[in-house]
Length: 442
Image (cartoon, rainbow, N blue to C red; front, side, top):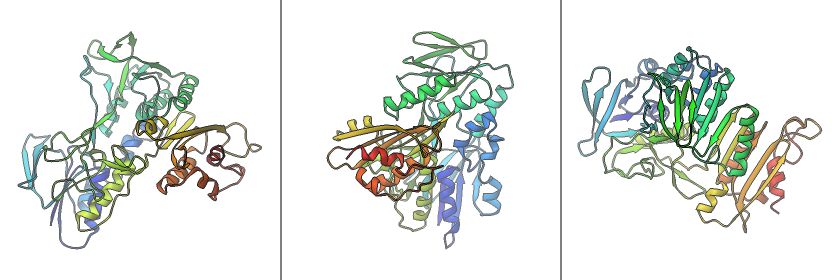
């Protein structure tokens, strides 16, 4: 059996390792358009401040290791341009030479990830304007920071924008965030997003709301950012305005979601025979929304890749879906979300209610320094839990994972009160904050 995997990062190589570990004879070719395999993209912002020593430290396994230890024909600089699902071939060009290639397959996995959105703004190709998605991207930013850089402007206040703001601030830069909408992290409700704005003010990170970037100007390198309302002096611009699935090279025989992601079933199969997809180029079933969704995260990519690899070699594993869990560090606060926000519940026409409390993550007599704000969203009549947003200085990750597990098992707010959660004064009160919030729903 001949397998081809397009993409050499999380989903692709998780699948590849399942094929390697399977029984039976096989030929396995992986095609990566870059030169680096299997690296943790989420760690790259922390290489800017030096928390991660070097960008290359996020590499999990080298290309040579995949080749020499695991016997994978791991190719680099191979940019796939076309998939012929009738002839069962993939073709493209080698980026370093321009030479073309074509390979046949028995079974194919598309794990091409996603590309940063690069709007067609005037001046966007000036020096000093970056996005951060790959190790080379990160090294380019670090090299540019060797110049006299004081003012950094970040376009976009989502996950990566906030992480980059923190890390630029940590190395002494003046940081401004330009946000087209009226809040940071649109995934959250406005009342919770206000806590992030408060932290930005505390850290002297300027946030500009309600302005749209129009262009950039400067003499070879960026000097000004122009919005629809005013101009901003800047020495460096970081674009963080979203990503789009890397599926543009595929034909219309595939089914796609609203963002261009490939629709897959629970076995990671596409609608085309012998073609699977996984990771940031594919859809994820959302258990609470009860529909296909697009949530490009490394956790999903690795899990989907593993399941796809097992099924490529004849397995019958199912991807059980997501509940929409994420966590983020922004300066001195942690931000967690799982399930539905109030906004999402409204969009789905669910009859819901909410409760929000601000409490302490540990016993009150142990420390009164830290605070934790918990917001639960639940069905009004049944009390079935729909989601949570938690922001605070300590213990956010613990609580958001508890709620994520409760969501997976379709628990109610009343069920939360029955959970046997750990307690000792340095870690918790006798009633955990999520249980304190659940009490208010009775």
